[in-house]
Image (cartoon, rainbow, N blue to C red; front, side):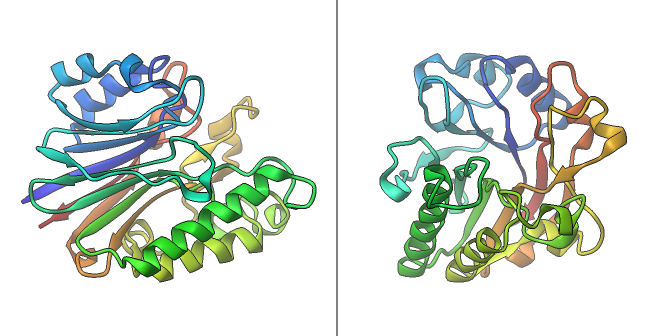
Length: 262
């Protein structure tokens, strides 16, 4: 079975319902993983998504912040969720497709503005969340699995607009990059996006603060698609839909895509 998967931090699924429907209509991914839905599940516009052909859903929601959802054309069974770092946040949900592939959808904490856990509790929570992810994947090494989401870390020098200027900025600090690498290694995950696009600057997020986000192009690659080692060779055709960042009332993230032949 061949299928295309997309991941997108939507920054309020209710506010941007029309943009989700636009993406579904124009790009027609088989599976769409959303983060930062900012809504309880019963308030998400799931009926509209079902009418668009995405009737299979697993989701975790919260009022006003966090929240993750997987929308699928392909039959999908609930595969649980984890509360890493015991934050009580809706930041992870998993679903298993009818071909046996389990999709993990993550929204890793952003970490606040100061890269020092002694003065910034949110930064500590981010590191603890990644540590718990690492330990979980080490204890139950994933097979036939895909991990996607807003991981809130741009790990490579060419995943940010200026490596040296961002070394002390949350999302690109060495300690965060190290934690993410340990999580990836513990699960045997392969970064499908960078395997397909190994060279050059690549971004999936541009700040709302930039008046001309496209011209300034001060982006970061915060959104990721990983595959477990046993199926990573089945992944291909990775891309980032940069144009979506320029849609009317957009999210500050752009959707990331990959296809799999399994």
